[in-house]
Length: 466
Image (cartoon, rainbow, N blue to C red; front, side, top):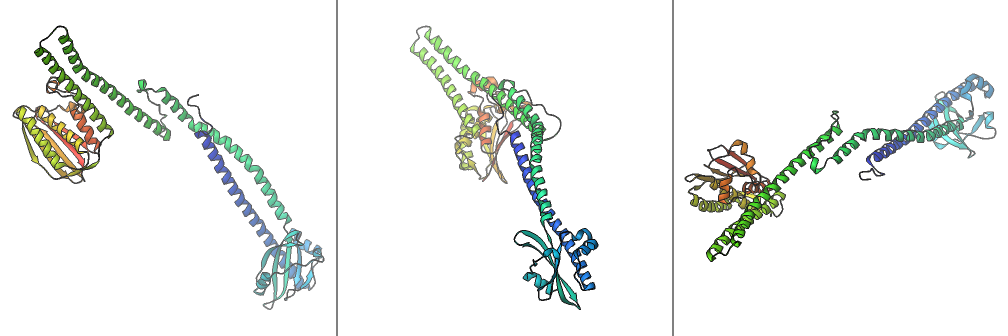
């Protein structure tokens, strides 16, 4: 089924990550706790060995005889359980030993001998007869400040090792159980946490291009999921606006193309209804050619608008704006001469930008043509070029009819004409200002307007300088 979750959905991956992380944590904690328990048991054994060694040495010094194990057991108590001992002379030769050692002797290592010479205890873990691991204490017995004897007390580690082995078995048995319970709990938590996401996905699937007005409901929790829903709603709002603009643009383009095509068709149909003279046919063909030229201009403007909007076909190079502005001024003077408008240059500063010279030329010409077109005879259109910090400013100011504040943004929309009749007469397609803004935006700049009715207009192009 479309939209069905795969085997490695986010929910599954969250559960696996959670379970895997818990396995690692339990293994680390189990290993550390095992080491700590082993160290703690060893410390307890060592403390017990020291206690027994001191009691035995004190009894031996007091009676000069080897104390019996039964008497030691009654005197020391459980501390003497499983322990055995051995006395050594200062040279390390065995002297007396406990009966439990029988014919065996406890080894004396070089390190223990050196530590005893310095009056220090030595704890070691050794193997007796290669079968039994023993914890061994070697402690010097001093007389008159000098080591007179050595006593060694040992205890088998089978009880300690048995305790550690049982602890390890418990850990090994409980870790899988804990991991299993954690996996189930993680799956439940992941399902609950992602349930709002699934609901958002279902809501999003119900939204189509024909129903972009719908929105995804938020829970009011001000958490990450609400932030995601708000982000998606913002995207849907932008899509709705873009679809609306596209529909309006398509309708306007169809209307703009239909008008000359209708006129062209009507003229041809009239000419074909009866035989005409050569002069009459010439008039029809001339009028048809004007409409064809108008269609070509509209098509070219649409193509340029498409390219400038997508930044396609804009060749990036260093462009000198000073000669470009002078060239625009020269063309503007020729256009203004036909309408009785005065074209002038108020100031010019050398400046450079990165972009397409041809696209920038078209944008500036559109602004100049628009200013000349809507400035009455005797009016004035003024160009200027200035640089301020990292920006270049190109201004086109006129003393024309001006624009109402409510229409300040509308004039940049495609096919918008505030004076429909006059625009038709001058052959405008309603795309000039739209193309100019698209070109400027594609160059990383802005195109702004300052105007008021009957007070003229000032279009300002701001571009990043180099």
